Length: 519
Ligand SMILES: Cc1cc2nc3c(=O)[nH]c(=O)nc-3n(C[C@H](O)[C@H](O)[C@H](O)COP(=O)(O)O)c2cc1C
Image (cartoon, rainbow, N blue to C red):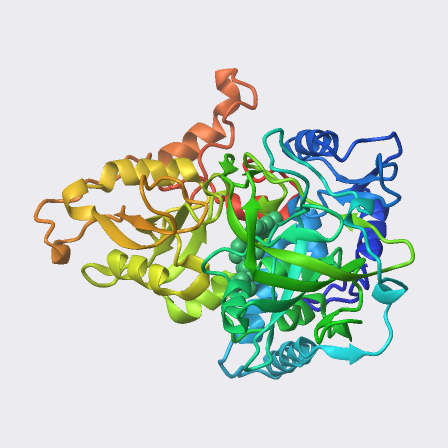
């Protein structure tokens, strides 16, 4: 179904369409046995995610008429499919060619350039007047009819785990969408867990007490991804979604509030957040692998629910990594690398290991060209808006280190780091979920580790020791005679030519194949 070029042939016009595509690709299993949204769906999903299994469509959910889809993004292949590509590397290439500002010098290059520029047209959403998301309009809605999951035993209640929360800036009228979990309190009210540094929260502060909010549950997967992407406020998530899906996002006006939401939505909850109605939200088994503790958050009041005639309820289960959201994070890693390189071009590659929950650890490779360069890169990352500003630990290695081979990063760091010279402790904002500071929330300290090889111009007065490598002639001789040694295939191919203590290039394999994040 995908074009051989980088352009997307066919966007999904709904979550249901994506579910069908997953089923046709052998990437979805339907479970007809009755399952309880209280813990049971989470336990099944957790096992399947960690085993690298398929998306799951639960058709018979106790207490609800609606089917539940989990693990739609849970592999490299499904994440790429969600963005209309075969691999995540292909998505990265698409971004790279769209933002490449150089002028091609060959006729073929010029055609390619025009094609990639024309794909930017898709970034402009279009407004439609009728939509399946409004097949049914419920003016007396009851959230208890939805199959909202309780995912972990100590959770404060059921949570909508994959919600797209739409808000609007009251002054500029610009809309934002972010994914902020929604705890269901009763038939008409929920929590609104927008954290301190998030755009929805910034909008809320401008509105004052009452903020119009629309919460979409289930949409075209490119739109769902875009809600999680760390975009600066000036970039509309619907523009990114349109670019990624290869067609403008159709938006429809809500029935009771002045807000445009994706026409492809399965469910839309229309209402308002009351900033003065603070209630206890949480605890919640979070993507850090620990519970985020209960705290005071404002309340969302539901006024109207619109939905498709036969909607699917989209959910995810977060918890101890690796979980499904690892792949949303890996998509962000790939999509944002070309953008990051526009600002910090000395970055050659980076890896956000899933165990770091995407804000605890970044491993970054740089082409160093002046003393203190690694420290400049750390500061640049902490200084770049939303995406990296909360990063707890940044490890900088030389450009020839494969940052996707974590063992090799550790080996380099342990060999190269002198703590008094190479550690940077930086005070500043940290993620609301960071529990490591004993006293304060959302502010603390971050760690930078310069694990690059030190040079004479950085004041290193000794000779940096060479790495241990066998010479090529000996390796070739041993390979040629391998059969004589009676060791079968064991190590027959030897260490690849480009091996220099940095390990094989895992990234290409990882991103090109449907495998577990830590495979
Ligand atoms: C599954 C999932 C759940 C998330 N839950 C929350 C949440 O409850 N609160 C929050 O502030 N951010 C949450 N995030 C992160 C935000 O969606 C992310 O930071 C996004 O870029 C915010 O958009 P904004 O910059 O427009 O606010 C979640 C992300 C994912 C993938």
